[in-house]
Structures are given as C-alpha cells and as structure tokens.
Picture (spheres, one colour):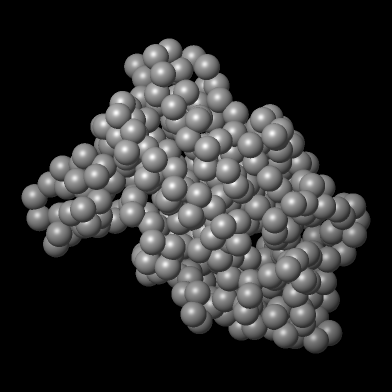
Length: 378
C-alpha cells in the first residue's frame, strides 16, 4: 500500500487550486486542513435526534426540539473525532459508506476505543432530506448532518472532492487534526489502525497519513482553468453581450482587482453598467472535474447571463447546450442580494446535481463582491 498517497494527493490538490484561483478570477483558496492544524469552528443549525445527541454526548438544551439547536464539533466531548465529509451523489462516498460502517462497528466493540472515539458525517452541499436518505440507504448508525451551503466544507479549505476523511484529537490547543485524506479508503483495517494510533498517548504530536485512491490524476480533473487572459476577456465580453439586446455596443471590459484578490470585469452597455466574474470551483466528488463559468450581473445584483467555460456531468461528460439553457433559466433574472435557494429536484441539471449546487453557491458568494464594487468610485 502507498501509505503517503493521501497526503501527497491532498498537497497536489492545494497546489493546483492556487493556480486555478489565479487563472479563474476567484478568491485565493484557503489552505486545505491537514496534520497539525486545528479544526475550525463552524456552527451547524440542525436539530439532531435524541439518539444522535446521546451518542455524541451533547446536551441539546431546553426547547431545542422546537427551535432547533446550534451545533459545533467542538461541543462533542470525545477525545477522538472521525469526521467524514461526503456527498450523496459521489460514487466514492457510496463505496466508502460500508467501510466506515465496519470501522465504526469495530471501534464500538474495542475496549479503550468505544468511549474515546465518535464518528460524524457531514453532507457537503446536501440538505437534510438528502443526508437522511443516505443514512437510510447505507444503514449508517452514526450521525450525519447537512452542510447545504458548503460552510464547513469551505472552512476546511475546499478540499476538491469527497470523501474527505479527518481524524482529529482533542488537545490543549483545540481539536488537532492528525490526518486528512481525500478519496476512497477501501480497506477498513487501514482506517482502524489510524484510529488506534490516534488514541495512543502522545499521538497529537505525531501526524498520521491514510491511504487514498484517486482513479484520475489531479491534472486530469481540470481543476485549473486553462485559458489565457485575452481569451478569457473575449469570453467575458461575449457573456456581457448575451445579457443585452441584439446590436448593443459593449465597451472593453476593465479588470478590477478586489481587496481579497478576486477579479471582476466592468463594462458599460447602452448606459447600463455590467459586471462579470469568471468563477472556478473545485468539485465535490473526488473523481469529478472542476467547474468553470462566467456570471454577468448588474449593479442591482441581478444575474444577467450565465456562460459555461468547462462544466461536466456524471462521467465527466461536458454539458450540452440544453444543460446550459436549463441552468440559465434557473438563475438569469434572479437577484442574489437576498440569496438564491437550491432545490436539487428543481434546480439541478440532470446527472450534474453537485455542479449545479456549486453554481448556485458561487452566485450567492457574489453578495460581498457587489458590496465592495458599490463602494468604489465609478
């Protein structure tokens, strides 16, 4: 077995992401969480079942059954946390579910582990109904909670796929990560061994590495937008032109660099100011391609055009024109000032649910961009 595969692949993903962000105009990516890092605090608004609360050792508080509860991983008093970021549509996550079930069963039968270790699954981009469906279909006995807006997924550095498995230990510094692995771990014994090592005295100072298997190399997954600046600018202008009546003259798009490093293009068309951003997002599946597209919007926060650059569906098949038209029908004309909701049943391109979710999530992320643009001199 290639024991260092997971960490090496994870590091490569981070390096490629840096190039992706620079080329695509998105904000520079955060460091993907790894051994030695402290698990970030993130509040989940979710009502856990009484069984889940009991397993995790959480006191939900008075009237939480009526108003819900704010939950953070830091609330869990366990010494060791095994956190699995998954997605219901990810084939590797589906394959890893029985592996985790087997590991959990072994932990609960092992003296010295059952009282120390707790498992938690987090559905990246999935809503509550989807996580409950996954839990039922895969017979998972430990808690699964939704992360529909990718809040926790982004907080750990947007790892570029699921499953993303984290083993962490409670220390005086917080919950310290001992290992973080992107991709399928097929052998339950490998994961169990890492948990046993994590539970050993002094393990907090000894980073662990899990084996991970990714069928495709990082470069094959099109994580970086391979487009020179002049070609991208032409696409930007094309997207702006599609947002206007035929024959409208579009000024040359001017590139604006925001305080956080994001880039936006500005142009005038018949007295109307238009903005456009080329967005690059790493995928939520460990074998899927990156998602690259342009969103053109106006100063009111209304989406005026959606232009794909490189988007694929299941099997990494490029989107058809009909897929693009469908997505445009779901976003063009809508304002992102108050946030766009995402309903997989209504808003997803067929066999491209997670790419669709990333697009909606990215449009919602334009709110602070528009706010900064509005404060700049015209």
